[in-house]
Length: 171
Image (tube, rainbow, N blue to C red; front, side, top):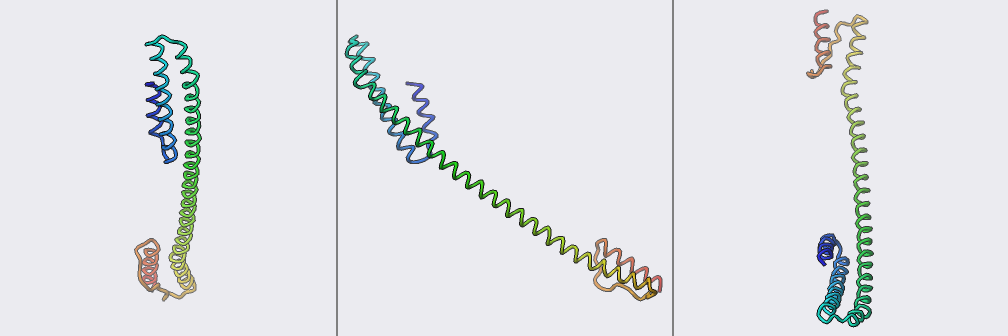
């Protein structure tokens, strides 16, 4: 009985759905009836030492109750399997949603990277093109080709500043 009680306690802690809990209550009722019949047989054998009555109880009450208990256990197993399948379906949905979220995040990251590359290309590229055009003017002999506008402190801004210094020193 102690082993059954421990098993029942552990099993009860795993119950998730209302249906499982309902079937488990039925299991406990049938188990109690089963244990009562078991005690009745033990008492009959120990107090009256009447094997005939004990055998009659065994055949007429104990075996049918054992079958009922087995049916309830089978039903509990089916109910647990059903709950497990439902939980598995929920988990699969959650995983699919996580994959969708990761895919969307990846797409947004790629889009952001592409837009950032275009922005940087236009920002840096336009200034380099301007610098290239002014350098071409100087190569043709036009020494009045200073680059005007707001000077930035990045590498290209420094190059433009030095370019303008060169133009000033040539004039």
